[in-house]
View 1 (spheres, rainbow, N blue to C red):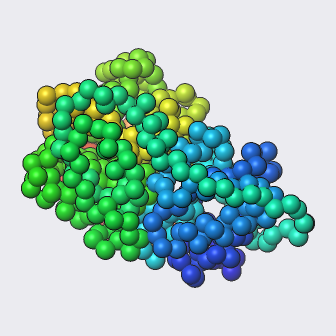
View 2: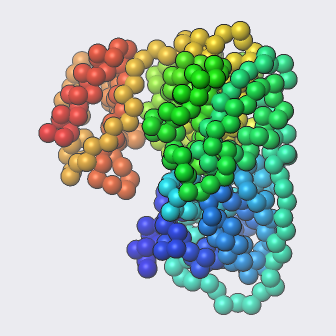
View 3: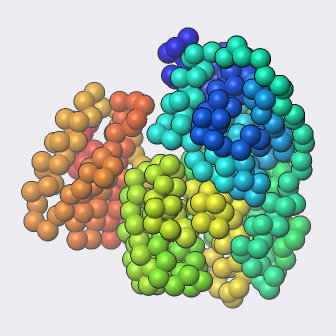
Length: 453
């Protein structure tokens, strides 16, 4: 049982198989543990709970709520929600929160994303380990008064807040295809688009946690093929794809090209720096080099982060950054309690397009300066030895710099690459970028031959 609990508690959230790992008994125990942790942290004595469309989510949330209220704390259930809607509720109400979702994982999974009041993250280094230990110890036997559970619909308040942050009042008419992947964007997107000067073409808006059409994981190109076809078929201006809990957004331009998340990071950075001259923006170390260039060209300060949302959120707080972008499609906003919001990123793209006479491909072209490999995973028995081999080969080259912020990053004049080990598997993850496709492919193949050889 101890090993099973260790497997369920990940670096940033709780996730596992329904019925065997994530059960009502487990979520009751986690509700008790989270309540104990919040009491220890002197957090407010009410927790906001949201849930996605997976069939298991309502029952698991119910058991978690029972665990929380058994310790005398109160609960506000906001019902069906995207993860960023739960963060909104936590921020607006100033309360800690719990979101029942397994994000882009297949149907047989579920999980919990936890946050402190004002959407502050709870990860392994910021409380999740304590909560895991409380679950192992079991519930305290003290008798307390039972807390109260109430319900509150916050969808329209959430949309109000998003539209205060991005002005879409004067955009030109646009035709936009949205692929919700049968996930929570099917719940939130209609409420958002009802207020926009856009013709919405919905795809897979039916909430269905069995994901009958494709996995709700748009970072995998096969899952956006239907969207790409629909953009061309409808002569749409833009396509949007959301993951299962709608905290990540990926875009497709009018030519059905999948847009690299670094391009969207650069676009939003450009827009935000016009509103906040000289501000700080966070980007993670596998983002395109173009992101830092765009930040500096617009008078901003770029700060490089390790991969992972807890690092970005922490750095945003430390540096008072206004925005943070991750290559995985997560976008973080200071005005959104430093939490990530796929919907807010999408609204920035729509605003940029609607304010301009240009197409999306024309708007993004200035940010597309390099060729990226995308992340390539290699199974390696000894990741440290393989990394050392690569460092030995490239580190001695003239004009090359090296750092170890997150794995190994090697910077050349018109290229760079990052090689970092997985936290959970014997894998090395490689990202390569260069000025030309030929240079990128040459580097990529050379490094892969070294680590796989």
